Amino acid sequence: MTGPTTGHTAIAVHGGAGTLDPSVLAPEQEAAYRAALGTAVQRGHAVLAQGGGALDAVEVAVRVLEDTPLFNAGRGSVFNAQGKHEMDAAVMQGKDLRAGAVAGVQNVKNPVSLARLVMEKSNHVLLSGHGAFEFAHLHKQPLEDDAYFFDQFRHDQWQEVRGSEQVRLDHSMGEKKFGTVGAVALDRHGNLAAATSTGGMTNKRWGRIGDSPVIGAGTYANNETCAISCTGNGEAFLRAAAAHDVHALMAYKGLTLEEAVRIVVHEKLPPLDGEGGLIAVDRHGRLVLDFNCTGMYRGWAATDGAVHTAIFREGGRP
Ligand code: ASP
Image (cartoon, rainbow, N blue to C red; front, side, top):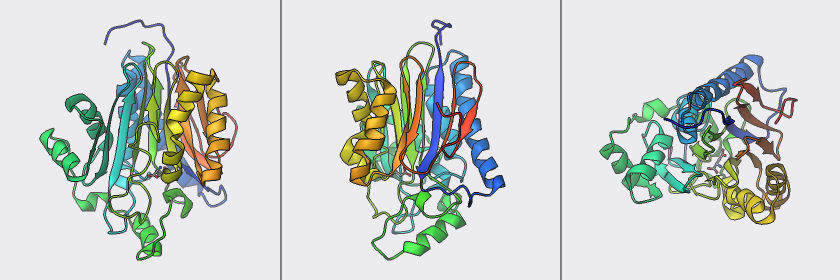
């Protein structure tokens, strides 16, 4: 890709947010999470450093997180009430507001790439269920059988609530494996992009669609303002139109990214039981990674490429 080579770049990723307890997270687990987040940031940053686009960077980063069973997306997706894995994903690019998403897809190895194909190869924004699966087949997307998505820890999580009406956020159920994944990026050409991918919530009713694939709820990007990827209790993020609200506060009220994120995460979401957080980057490359619970798995790098990761409210938070 050609273009100016002097612009700033920035990338951030998340691996879910929730009620995390530092005392329960073993050092080797923490190291594994940080390593996966760091690899995702590095791979995304490498795309940006070579002059690549923000959309390529967020897709690459999210694929890294989908391919590890550590996170509730792709391979590590939670079980729904029927013992199946139904995944949601979305991508959006800020330069022309094009977006693509899939909801309730099964057996697709990398839902984020399928979401991108919906954007690039169909006339639609959001495909669901069997139609999305057929579209994956049409475009020769790698598929995996159910065994690939099986994870004993997540199966045990499901057994705890199986047969009940309880629906649980992956990250509020224990201290081993957490959350939805996402990435936001600014490339050298001034383009912003966002991507989010999830298995949703444990024991969710089949057919339930969360915020992640809904443009404006869990995912949004607009070159005039920012790119956003959310994680948390999806129903609340849907009702709050959370991602679009951050954009709107900047676009219509002239707020900074920090102010806009603070209002959505700390004022708007909590009354709706909206536990969680979001990652955001603005058109100047400023990163804000904020949450209203005890932790959010996250990583980021600015133009210099130095990779940072954090889980709790430790220092070094942008
Ligand atoms: N937002 C996701 C959903 O509700 C869950 C998560 O962030 O872990 O589907």
